[in-house]
Length: 150
Image (cartoon, rainbow, N blue to C red; front, side):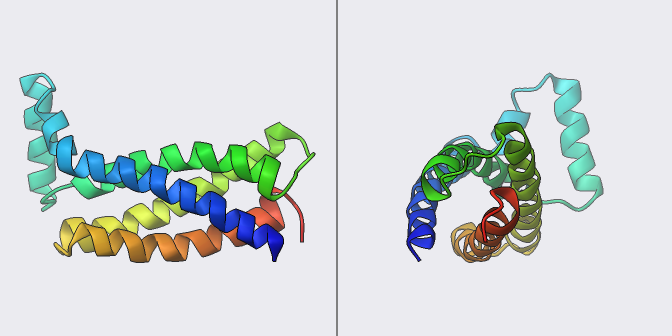
């Protein structure tokens, strides 16, 4: 139970890091504004491709990915040393951690893309619900596979 409490504390900090990046990018630097910084040919290509495939926006998906990556770095450092007290090989654990987190990133981004970007649901409640599920799955994988403690 102590390990789970630590994981939750690290998760709360990860939440703060991830959500801060997510919210800042959605509000102040959405992907659509970044596209405008590209040379005109590239901007037309990206915008045209999105319209061709019926994609209204990828702002929330882009912001989620950036926020998730920031939280992931924080998570590995704190969970490896403090939560799980791992003494295993950093390289192997880091590789498993990256695989685990990229699977979680793909799942969360897919859900957010479908619900917020395609369906137009409000991005904040979609993000919160998605992160709750991803956090539980991530803990189980970290505990039983990444850091190898049962």
